[in-house]
Length: 287
Image (tube, rainbow, N blue to C red):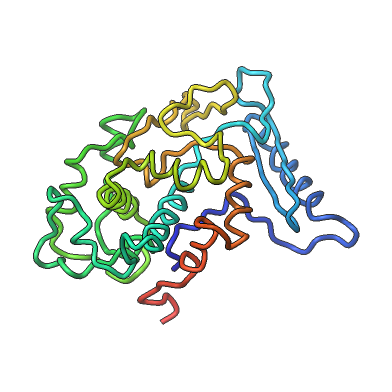
């Protein structure tokens, strides 16, 4: 398992027709998808031999005439985890931590691991989704706060960290948000800075990602989403605890900038790929 959570917005497979460029093939496929779902907005960034292409379909909302473009803001959700993992590796490069260190000494004093799991969890276990820790009960969170289920408090983390006495399926892959919440807490504790400040200083500003947003996302050019019942869904407000697991907002222009930076394998951000692209599986699925 790669140390970061790899997110594929759109995967297009199949053999390209002879004489047809990749970008035209992508456009034709996405246009077909949009024609079947005309009420959705779709924005895609594509890089081919260092050249950028942007494909946009639809409008920012059902009630607006403004079409989406490469500058339209979306909730990027768990793509935020890629940023968090990148910060962890940058911290290792700066000598702040080692990804093979146990997490015990990097947590604030209020988070106390039980004796049964002390000295067992490494930072890389968190990053690769194989810690075995229980995840948040989002069903309960949705019942309590349907519009803002990701607005968690420390009690929710204490319940998992302080009260867990076993690691279920440790070493096997199980997608988890608590893992990245903990990584964010450790980053803040290590640097004595907020996750928001760290992501801005170490990724957004160096990459010139001026439209990747944290606490302030009051912009006009953003898509308006709806829940499964068609009711308009609010954007998730910034919560410092859950933020490292999935609260950034961005657009395809900024995300393409980040992708190009990562592909260079240069600089503090790009060099992290030598670690983030390593495999960390302990119990391979094929065995």
